[in-house]
Image (tube, rainbow, N blue to C red; front, top):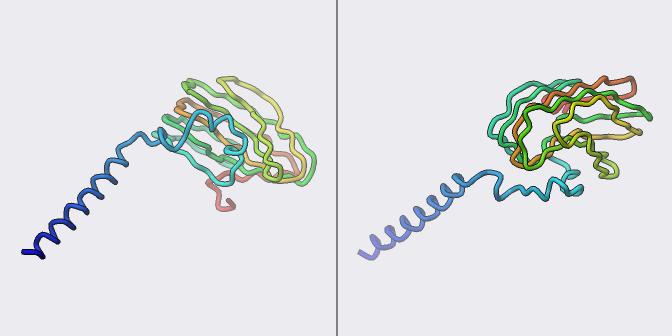
Length: 170
């Protein structure tokens, strides 16, 4: 009889653990892990590695272009690594459309210094230049509760290597 009570107690403890774990999976994915304030924190943005959630992310990317449609994006997501061996300006064309977001921006992060430069913050269409000195850079999407479409094209000059995150070279 004592052994039966022991098994019943262990069973109840296991069920409580399973129930607690399953309830944590039901919670909104970005509500506890991400905050709108993090999107303005250069230290958080420049950290190595990605930390993000998407409800939907469709599209394609290669070494010189990205076209994506996204919903429920929160976090920081690296789309390119740029490696420059000289001072150079990298022309780009960027279109952000149908944007609905608490926070969304495209940034350029200098890996050596941690400097974060905002490339675009809203639904702007622009043709500009990324200014690079020798070193490694990351182009990242940063957002909180964001949905929309993004299309960006780089005209990668000599002296710069662009690697998209889906490449075998990543």
